[in-house]
Length: 501
Image 1 (cartoon, rainbow, N blue to C red):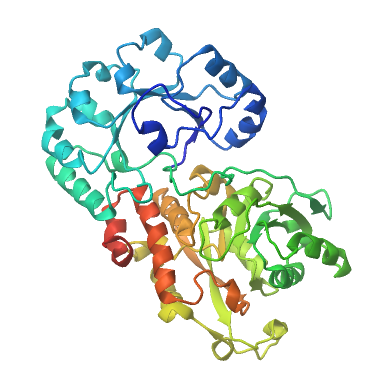
Image 2: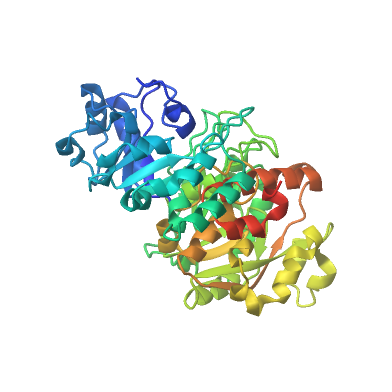
């Protein structure tokens, strides 16, 4: 679960190790107390603040920390293992948790102070150089210290091979679990997003924006908040809004939050111009989420998950519905979804791809034939799943079928599992990762009776240029990010074409 907000406020560190660079603890510039209010807003969704090991408690460090105006005292201090001797118990007791950071087992063996209660966790960074030694000498550590260790699997910087590949992580996990039956799977799981050196400095991963346009039909609070990210889809998302404006359920029961994900096609102005012109009578919020650098399909500036997080910050409904910008819902869809959410925690909508040339106005005709007018891509992957709908929760990995083209769930559950991870900046797996965490929370999934329809898309809008090879390459990148956060052998065995290479 994503519990910590990791504070990055200094561009340098007094130590000569690689922890700061590889762990993502350095800021591209030194921050000052003037940055405090801005960072305070970014920290609001998190349960605790993680102070990295380059936080040295100097006068300037403490002045910056004071400027954050924390609403809680859940401070988590990371301390470099080489600094243990100089750390007084009185100083450490000021923090909610203290985590020791190390990249060597021999240092842990020679640090008996780790059994002290103020050290709640030992983050052991696993590398190509040390993983075999960790397995070999693991039992030389005392049982209390072994129980405190959290294994950290960092991401390799481009061109470097310092950290483990997925197959090596799987082997490390397997060998260590055989050696120590008291190991817990949670010791292999990251409790915050793993830093990725490929993320551009201009990417704001914890953005927060107020609506630039809002329409409210009355003072009542809607039950359902529909969050739609959109990038260069102005015509398609307008059609989506038309169908959502024409629902059987009362208008005050739902709100729509459209997040313009930095589009270059004038989406924001286009929607504002057409909203009243088309007579929309809905609760509606339009958020503009700007981009410094425009993106291209397939690049590392994919922000669908981030845009949904931005939208949820403005949501007021107890229930959430995530939808893609080119999905249309029939008249009774929202009514059915709200009813299904009264009985189930997570509801997955069915999606049908409309054939080229099919007019979406035909969807409301009584003689509309779904089979003749739609298709299922990817060798019928979803079609097979829909036909086996009653057995979903009996699958070994039901989380594989969670997809945010149409996903409904409780807002409380979404926030509790940590929202969308912020490091899925390529196409794919950000929703699978969410599904995995929802499943681990013990929530049951329901395949909805609602069928939604994907508008036939522009060729140039395809994220992988209609190339199966490029699609597989993009998904391989994000599948590895997904696995690296959990090192769950079930994930590794379930996704062999992406991970076992």
